[in-house]
Length: 407
Image (cartoon, rainbow, N blue to C red; front, side, top):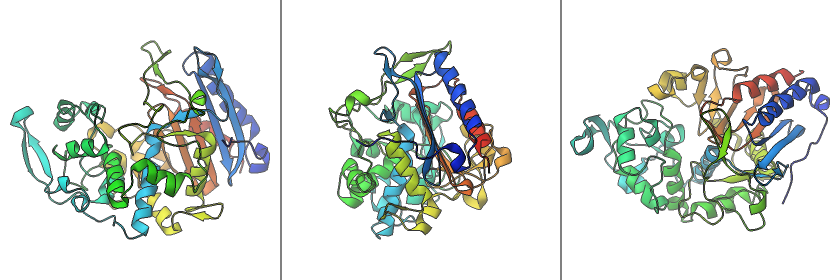
């Protein structure tokens, strides 16, 4: 077990200690008011951690504190790890980003697009082209989530038992076969819609590599990077360090809710959101990204490949706001493009909070977040465990970190 530690004082890294103190007070206020159980935030520059704060509780009922080695369900922050795995296989020539998905998963041959109707009366048409691997990496494949409740195809996912992406008792292969039977929302490559695509990529990784997803992640990414506290399930020794999961109540408080089962190897290995990690481990993953695919003498990806992952890949420089389906037309998305499983700031003036062009990162449904700001050689992570209803902390987190940039 390795533990993240502060390496330098803020001023040595060009950060303002007063602004970072305001950041700590802001989140301590959320914890003290009962809106968060506890949290951890780290800010690093040039790879050196200049600010590290753990505050509050990882388990409210047991009175256990958040500590630097606390383990967190990172949910959708799994997706960039999945992207790295796909790019590893691409660099080795075992797949191409322009491969039709059906080359690796035949169930996706002859995709069809929703036209009208519901239930047994659904009408579809042939898609204008195949789903490509790059469409999955950029969420432009035409797939969706059942919990959106915004499009008839969302309803078809729910009818198939996919409201939360995974039907009970199914493994990854069985679930992806189920996705393949459902129509697409739109022709591949023509819109952006956040979706189950990374679960499909997880299955592609298994088929191409000949290994279960957890084995491939462990052998090719986690162990080489020294991410010994990251995986799809916990060892008995790790279990006491896991933070409990909470949900936001209608009154703005929190209550315990069931979390992703991680105390034994899950039947369903989710490339979309299955990983548990620590602040130390995710700092190392961010360092891999910041340093262009290499860390401590271990190179996983070529710099040009990492640059491709973290550059806007939407057609014509489009943004999530302009290219996304209606559910994604939210304030701030007009300033964000999308790379391979990371958002990318393209127009800082049109985001919700201060940011810099080229900054990339992603979040998780339990209110976790990370970003890498290449212009300022900055990496930030925020960890807590609350599934929100109205709680929004990321704009203020970005504003306060922005204020801390002294140069």
